[in-house]
Image 1 (tube, one colour):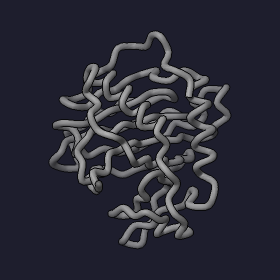
Image 2 (image 1 turned 180 degrees about the vertical axis):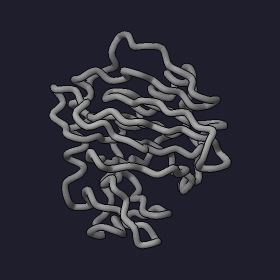
Image 3 (image 1 turned 90 degrees about the horizontal axis):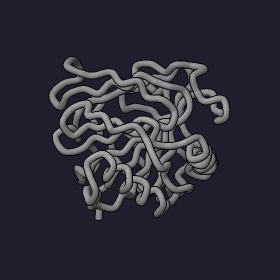
Length: 217
């Protein structure tokens, strides 16, 4: 993937440990990421609809790299899909996660190797309820990239799904990092804003790439 842009807006602290990095990727970098997502979404172990234990389904479709997540555990195969081995996590994504963490917290902050990617596709009606990323053994920061349509990203507290929370509008090319005291904060996407993707991206909808450290050894 093309190297970072020479200049960007300053990171924005949302809460202790939660940092918003606007315009983290230029349009060419966004296209590169989107093309990679399209390759990853193809079978085997490709994009699928996630069913919850209560019998519901998530409105965002999903594909995983490195480790396959399904409610609420990880596996080495697409247990709730076609059963194929999960696609490998590429080294360049770990490098990208490390640069993003260092930009959020300062040089040298990235100390662990990222090995999980969860890619969610949202159409105009998809949402994500308030939840915590707590199925990993590591509490290394979560790194999130946005492509396509803008959304309202609701970042909450570590105690409950309700207030207090902060709504952040994420645009295509933005990044968000949360670790430390914010690592287990509840967060979700209550709204996607159709038709707001950059015209040069050719993406109806929103793609979110979330990078994590499993700690599984």
